[in-house]
Length: 553
Image 1 (cartoon, rainbow, N blue to C red):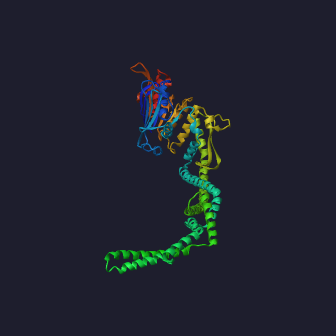
Image 2: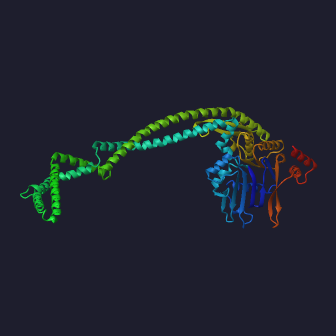
Image 3: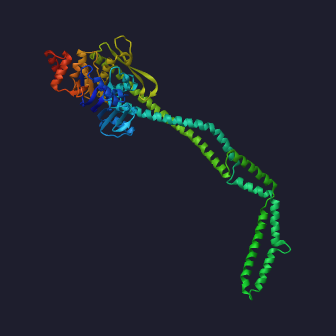
């Protein structure tokens, strides 16, 4: 709900404050007084574009501020949270235009771009102007109206939840299928690589060990020769080294009792003897392990050749890396198979949810088809009351190819303006003034059933008078029992229905400039203003009496 509108330095408005009440606020004034200018300023905080040409004083910026009570507007608060903006029971929307024409917008003192501003303020203000037919081109709006009047709230809520679940499952399924398709293209090649590695079945470090073993076998004769020569020097020659060390040790031991200094030397020689004997034994063992098997060498060479080929093929450096690659391929191929199971499960879930979506869509569609002719008849009757006696309203429901976000129906509001039996979409068949009255009739029917923001009607009564104007006033007043309504009007029958009456006029300020002013009329001032709307600047007694009766009514 709009609590206060502040306009500074816009067109011929110097400084203006408007504080509407919760119900029907009527705005009147002479043509050219500035009523449309006020709407122009308001449109700035609704996200319209502007430039420096709107500045009355080129040395100061233009500022338009709207103060809104959003305490019970949960949809708007959710939108604030989605944009990560401060949330409170009052929201201040501000738009500034600098002298250079640069524009800035703020929501609770936080800068926002025009896209965000328009998105947020559309939840706060619904501005109906002549030739403003966007709402009646919006399929969602038409569907919302029909569902509200059909009492489909709970059904639609359940349907939307199911449809979102179905869309989520469909998205997951598509992603998994796409992934499966990609994996499937690679699966055959990966299986070939895995079979190749599995068939070879290398053990950890096998290629490196085989390479080392083959090198030893290739030099076996030289290795054996060196080992045998070494053992011969130590134990098998004419004067084996071990025997010589043993003899020297014994000789030293024989003089140890007369010369104690040689005892440590003798002990060291004894240790050397033991070490040399052990080395000789190890040399013999190593020699025994040297293999001269030509068949084994052939086998080793084949394993090495296969190993190096695979190392090069997979751009790795060791047997262990090949084994790791083999394990990775096994994991990926296993995942491909499990992905198929996951897809099968998702398909089953999707199918089950889709059946529920179809069932709920049928229930909603049945309610819509049942309600549509009743609603169409009521709107036709209301149109007759508001000055469109030849108009016939119709709601066309067609089955869509598949369930969508709002059900399995396509809904269109159609109008035959002149009993021609040719129905067209409302936004094509109606004029600007008629469009506003059609919207008024629609919203008067949905007032109880739908949450709506502040409703602003600009000259909804253009082209009508008398009883039609009176009926428009009644509809506006009835609508204002559930929603805040602001209506700019030239009809006394409408102006008299307002719970608060604003009068727009021009005045000369201290600098001899003509500016737009607004004031709230008291009861006697309202009677005079409405009498002037009836009988001119100098209303007769009859006009005054008529005005008083309208206001009292």
